[in-house]
Image (cartoon, rainbow, N blue to C red; front, side):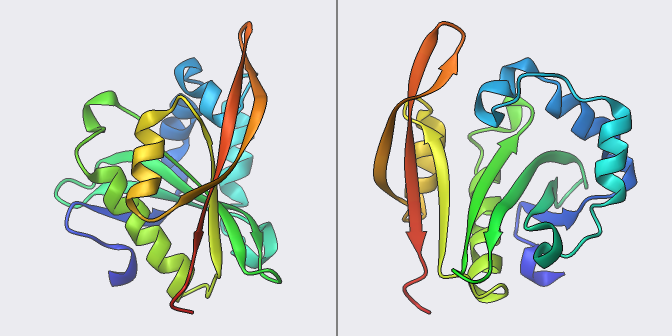
Length: 177
């Protein structure tokens, strides 16, 4: 699919063979802060999730895509549209690049650009939003690079260990619509 293919990465639907990758990602405690996860996921639950991954975004209200490298087909991350609201033409966006060695190379940027284009021009959305911890400077930089603007800060929104962290709401409007 040309729409979801860039020079460095392409986005594809979830497949049964993604079970181990998703299992490792969802159970990485290093990522629990950004995913708001508190408990591990079993392979059984992930298998069930993958069994239902064929549902249309209009049914499930979410779309999770796998980020793969163009040159090797290696799976490197996931990117999501969630809280899909067709009436109000909006959705939330989340992205994770699993291995630190694949970060800060433009791979996440290209994946996000592909998803923005898909959301605005194929799903005809009016707006996208992202909830980002104010201390997650890499994510703030990534989303603001594409025009997401901070429209508010939720004070002490998330508890991380003994700390309470602020979370900012970033929004991107489809002004070409």
